[in-house]
Length: 121
Length: 324
Image (cartoon, rainbow over all chains, first blue to last red; front, top):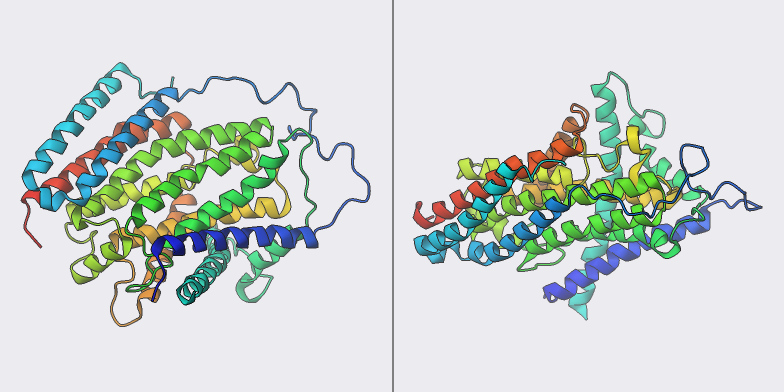
């Protein structure tokens, strides 16, 4: 008698995490330690030079338009999944309805393509 | 209690098998790459160098653990653990044999896609918490790539869902075992969807030609720049495990999973997985890395519309096509 799928899933994830954690613990037991803390060992790596400036600054995320598109298409997928499951039962009617919905979306995609929003800027 | 014990045992066996296979896969890749470049690959440790990855793992275990002074302590330590958990967790729903999967979820495919999408977060956490410019750039690139290729991956995965009417991976494989593999019939939908799935999968697991997040010639080692010892090993392992599990999923979705004559199902699943895995490494050692802009334009200008067209084709096929 197999257990509830969700329970099995939780057990599996717990085992996966425990295994990874076990490897970290094993490494903690086995690894070498420097006798005295070194002055430069724990500095940020920047090709051997002293690191200049700070890392956590604001900089241009060039793909923010792409991120917007991702949200749109991911939402579309959320609407498509229930239809996909019942596509056979819904038949031609369901297909036409979904095709209309996706068609409008792809019209938007085409417009964005022509505007050049899908290019690296 | 008994059924929980069964699930626990199966989980322990599957997780450790995936880890062992991952070790083997690393050997396989190094040997394969060596041969492609007229080298021998590892030969010294064990027969045919088979124990080389094990030796590497022990070596990495002994390495000193260094955390940069500037790094965000908690997140820096947490990222490798989360990364490995996400990568291994995806194996939970892979159907191993008729009626056997670590977790028989009705929405198995949805779970896989969800955990696949989450996998980029530990990578970005690692990149951000390292407080290293190379690592941060690697993390930013990883996100750009991952959110882009998530969409074709979803669309390609929608094709088997539409054709089989199920999101349960066991059920998808069972229907292929009773009928025909989706890559065989209807091949005009199955094969292109399979190709898009493979491509998107390569990108999701940051494999060449989609490895700009790592790009060792420009970003040192990408997000893993500041990691040493076992924490680095976990990232490495997670990457290989991710590729391996994704190959198994592609085999389950399009190539009939455990379906095959004579030998028991698990053999067939492993065989198909390793054939796909070999293909991925063939690509890896043959092609060059894409640039960021090429990467995004391939995805949004070609793969997304192709994916939508395929889903529409699959929908039309089940609405008007022959009933099975």
